[in-house]
Length: 74
Image (cartoon, rainbow, N blue to C red; front, side, top):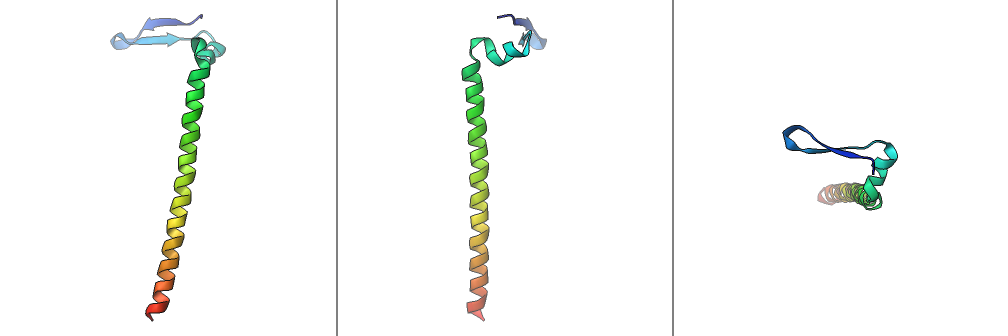
């Protein structure tokens, strides 16, 4: 591990990586870190897709109900 921890502002610890490969490896925990990030991205994308489908279904149902209701009322 060739990264170093330094004191930042307000006594916060700041990690400085010496290369991108060390950043990706995350000190040996890269599999868990990036696996977790990937799972969050997958869940968020799935949620957006499902919300879009639900929204479209609601609009289609509303259009059917409004269209059918006006014809029978006349």
